[in-house]
Length: 305
Image 1: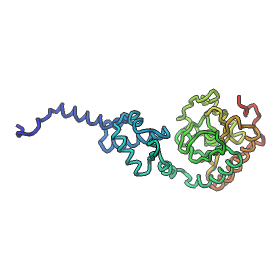
Image 2 (image 1 turned 90 degrees about the vertical axis):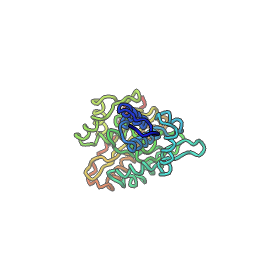
Image 3 (image 1 turned 180 degrees about the vertical axis):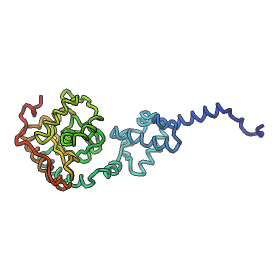
Image 4 (image 1 turned 135 degrees about the horizontal axis):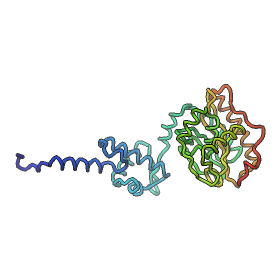
């Protein structure tokens, strides 16, 4: 018998039903959070918001709420907390939200060679000054490349990219050089997780053709992207080697096709090759493995088809 004034006791079935409903409504973002404790569900929501912000440069509170199926008040509360911690910024004019560089700063500490970016910076700035084009530094992460540093082109029109962006291995010049000089067993393991997605008409979309491309890349001493990833963008890259002679990163220069020429590409490859030699030595590579070809590939390979 219950005491007067107390609410009626729920049946076991009603209790289970209400508990299940509470769990479901506390996790709008991911299926994994549906059966998680409230504190874990909150963490999952934070990372879901961060991932959504990473997918788009800037977004509004309403857009985030709709995209993630979360109440605006919930999203706002998390955004303000992340903003106070320095992970999220808010534009004053538009009040749209975006990520700061703090996550990248944390992630860069996991690089196998923490000084890699600082070592490469002067070489990248020199390359940008000499060519006028965008210079990238990329490393391998899972079965993709990650851009960890960038020097922008001096021109108004250039390749769009951002530090922290991922890109595929099979259709980027950096991806090709990382795989071309990788130890075969590790290379095969990495490529087993790669998706040979078609981005353009010229994208290599099957493993046998890609392995042939890696052989050609190694033979000529550098990698090429011939409008395989971004339309109207050509790119050349070289690997950078660590103490054991394995590639630890790639450095590239990207050109819009209307500014690209075989002569400019040849000069750029020479600059990249010298940068690879110098950076690799600073990283502890005693025997530089790169043996660049004496000639640049014929226009059959280099021309825009």
